[in-house]
Image (cartoon, rainbow, N blue to C red; front, side):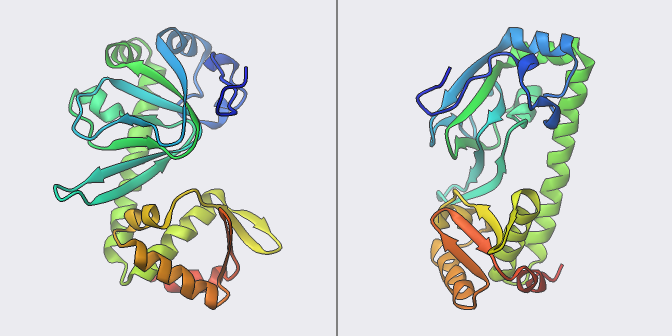
Length: 239
């Protein structure tokens, strides 16, 4: 049944037609049945806060559709976007498992469907279903290795332009669509949010994009970003 945010809710994980493409959700019938019994499915509008850094863990969220930004903040209020989570990802698992406060804040970037599982139910699911436990461990391991790669890439990058080029190339590899005008990316992030991903200012991101447009390396049409000179961006990456 269509929702106010134009998303169709899939109430049963077993009936989901795309779960085999999503690492955590691709589990056997008995495990999915157990998860269906304890989850609460909701559709959230853009800009919805799922949990806040430092908050006691209430449970975990599984992203069914849409994207969620995960952020951390300094005591001075400076914000850094750690990563963007997509369908099939589990949010808040480390806090729930360790019973430690959430290390990040989570906010929807677009209308999104998510399944919420309370902490006690999640722990019982992991204890009673080895498959769910293994899939959760795999996701945590993948996020750990991804974090290590990001730290290395950003830490060893020589310039802000290189950091931004690396981010754009990573997006191209994950979700780029090849067109006659170049690799197309749908970018829902503002320049401020992109700046928060690479530890710089909005003005710097705007300046770099303007320079790239002037050099005909990229083209911007609304939310679509076309990478016209992929090799020039690749040449900027030194590590």
